Each structure stands twice: as C-alpha cells, then as structure tokens.
Length: 183
Image (cartoon, rainbow, N blue to C red; front, side):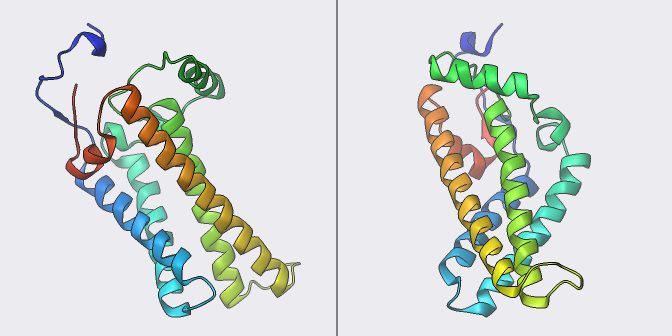
C-alpha cells in the first residue's frame, strides 16, 4: 500500500526524536541571533556561533548513531536520486516521504557544511589560525560570504518545507515541533 492510499485519519507516527527537534529549533534560534548581532554585539554573536558549532558536533554524532530518521545513511541521497526527485517535484509528481525527502536530505548536508564553514571562519577571524595564508580582512570576507550563503540555504530550506507542506497537505513545521507525522 502506498502512502497515498493511507487515510489522513490514520494515527500519527513518531518520526523526529526529541534530540533532533531540540537541535533544530536551538540551531534556528542561534542562527537568528548570530545574524541579528553580526558586527554589532560580539558577545551574543560569538555565543551563538559556538552554540552552532556544538550543535553541528552533536548532530554529526547523532547522524551516525541515532534512530533511523536521524541517521545520515537513511536520508543523504545520491546525485541521481536527488535530481530525479527534483524533476518529479517540478512536474508536480514528487513522492511523499515519512522522513526526509531527497531534497531535504541534501539540504541538511548543505546546511551543516555551510554552518561549519561559517563557524570555522568565525573562529579563525576571532582567534587566528597560525600558518593560514589569508589576511584578517580576507578571513572576514570569507566569514561574511559563508554566512550569507548559509542564509540563502536557510531561506531555500524554509521554502522547501512550505512547498512540500502544500504539495502533500501536511504541516511539516508542526511535525518538527511534535515529532509526529501521518503514516
């Protein structure tokens, strides 16, 4: 039976565990704080950055050891799978997934890499890196570019969640709050 044959009234199932949900919303808050305080109020900016770095480390560990829907092996798509899904999405025929769809899985990887590059360049900017062949100004420019690129990814992530919610008539934001989705 495909997921399209299951009535919407079927009992919701747990998908996103508490740690995933806590990391997701803490990360969203920390990113917002870091963006709003950039170049203005350094203490909360740096605290948010180190919070993001800690979340990346925890998420990496959980992506290797956590439950099925949290594990990278369960949702990081091959390029072929990703492009096939995006093609189906453009044609309005994208399959519904209980966990991450291929675009969502790819976005998680892109966001984690973007956040890692942003925080690493922020640490290098604040504390320096011996032997780094870049000037302070160049590292600052890299940090700002990484943050802007990550903000673009965040906007694409939100747009993708909204699009998928509309296509599949499912409130994905609520599922990231409750941890539950329909089967």
